[in-house]
Length: 121
Length: 312
Image (cartoon, rainbow over all chains, first blue to last red):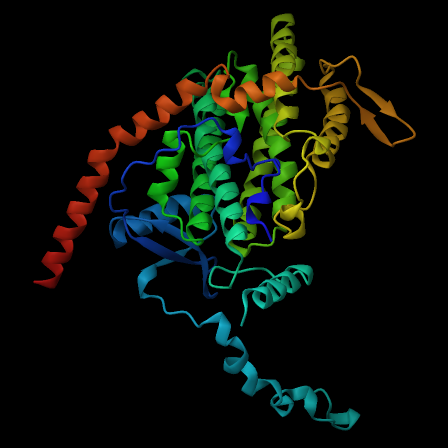
């Protein structure tokens, strides 16, 4: 497949050969580290991943998260953790990793047929 | 596994509406197309703050000023959601910003038009954000997970932008003769650029429809544009204003509005950098970046110092 073909100009995707820019990038300096943001939307609920942002340190990460992710009262508590500390499972190993659970249907309550009188158990 | 097999599995996932996540295998061109599109989208949000920011200090009332501030702050937030989504594909934030400043990366041409009167702020909310929403609602179902999730968040907030714009124009449309004229004038100036936001006609693109096949996009430019025209042509009746197009007419057979031809010469000129405000916008962005350099450096130095104190 010729990957150069993808030049169709869609809304919001202006092809590079149409930009007329001089296409020179400056040398990059170090970015502030990336942080993952977790937000508890309501007391009693889990913190849930909301997104990520850059900040120089943890306190700035929390302040930025407040501005970026809770402008409409979406949260009552924020966790931030530097992205580099998150270890993720490898999607290519998903098969082996989750396979052991596939054939253990007896772990689900619906596996057990009970008489009607007690079936609400 | 040979690459062809990876591509086959990838395409099967797309066909079965399974989202692609950052660590999943993906064709290099899929990665590149997404980086380009998401970063351009992010740049549009950021540059889009400039024409509106022009009116924050001159809003006609405290209420309108607070609304405009909130809206501009949202645009900044949308830019950040999108930059983060693009970063998951391996592009650094600083690279993206450099590409914007060098002219390599583009942003929506609509922001290269000036905001001449207060009514322009209403017209931008109603027409420009209205056009953007057409695209964004479609993108909540795009195949790349982080992009789709960012769009869900954005769409929730965008609705406020469009509604406040319409309401602001509604007030003008019921006001004095001068206010009515100002309202009509803003609509006249923003209508065609808003239609241009959807990009060239479908018949202009002869290249492969890879973005559709990969479900990065789900509707063509002309489909989205038609949906937009149909929506606005109805809504403008409430304003008692007129769209500046003599060809605009309901077509009973097609069950859509017919409309006139866009000035494509102007479209390409603005894309290529010759619009009324292209230069001004980039100068403003670069200035903000350069002026902020000492803040970025100071914050980084402060973080190092604080970590040292903690370690000691």
